[in-house]
Length: 88
Image 1 (tube, rainbow, N blue to C red):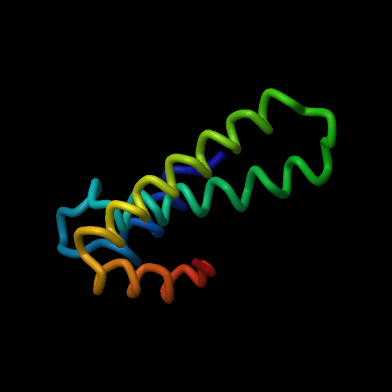
Image 2: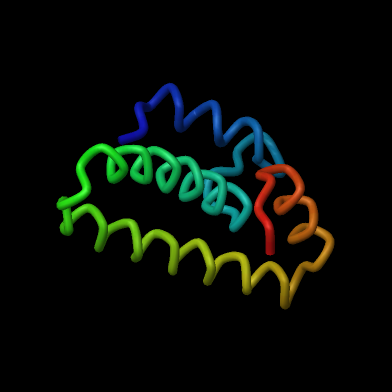
């Protein structure tokens, strides 16, 4: 679970402008951070199927945002992929 401080840090790193909190880039960054943390949790707790289902939902949501960026804003898509080190 992301703390408020961690979430604010992620938003500042990926925001397009000062008051940006909901752009696809910010949402992808937050989801990526949450996915990373939940993956670590699932490595320790292998039978936690409820969290696994939540993880799959987050991955699907992130993929949807990335497909939107790829289709409508290719430059922004390539920038966020490089910044977050995602292989797509």
